Image (tube, rainbow, N blue to C red; front, side, top):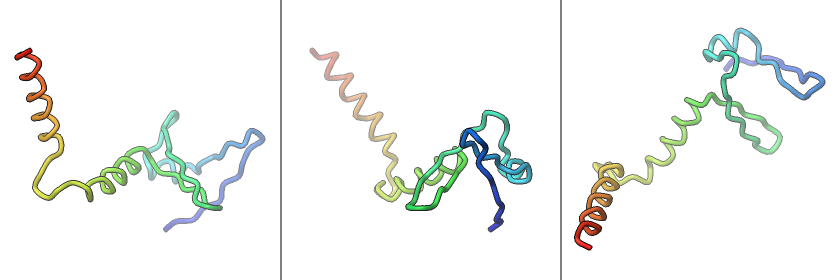
Length: 85
């Protein structure tokens, strides 16, 4: 884990050091997701936040089943019911 120091400017903004921006492939306008954990601020890239969210929610997915396939089948059943009306 690499440590570095940042300072707040007069507007409360944080400047991420160039070495870190390059490593994370951040460019002007890049979005970071911030999490406040008691007295700790954690910043993640959008890709990392998405990966963590997918990892978290995958624990609720039954093994060997894609929920997207289940959703598609539900939509098809609903469409067939609508045609019968």
